[in-house]
Image 1 (cartoon, rainbow, N blue to C red):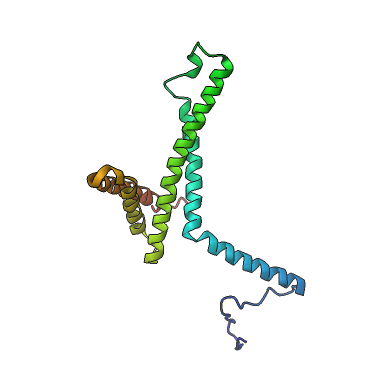
Image 2: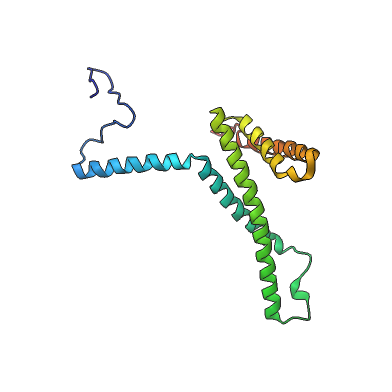
Length: 180
């Protein structure tokens, strides 16, 4: 029980707040369930696994979309082939587009999931949200992605991805002018 003092705002421990005034018992029960669900949803959406899966899924979608758009600029045109019927040409074109979308989407998704997961783990470990997380996350991600190119390639990939992450983070964290 919280002690009430005259002329002071009552303070309640987290989770022990009273329900809003004027609710019936049934409405209070619904309100409490809603509060509990909101708490669980917030915990889930702040987890590194959720962030990584979300980034991977969005990366896959963007990669597939970019690949689909770039297919229209392809050098080789399957419709120009004269040895196939129109139906076969169209089928071949859509199969080629689908393979490209899958390949590019998978690559974008892998990079997005890896970077997001690494940055989230670093942020959780450091318990700070600053530029260092993006730089370190980019460095680790770049090194992992370029690991098959040898030590020099891995270091170059790590430095390049860290620089790219830094540039993006600086752009996202910039102070926007107030246009009043």
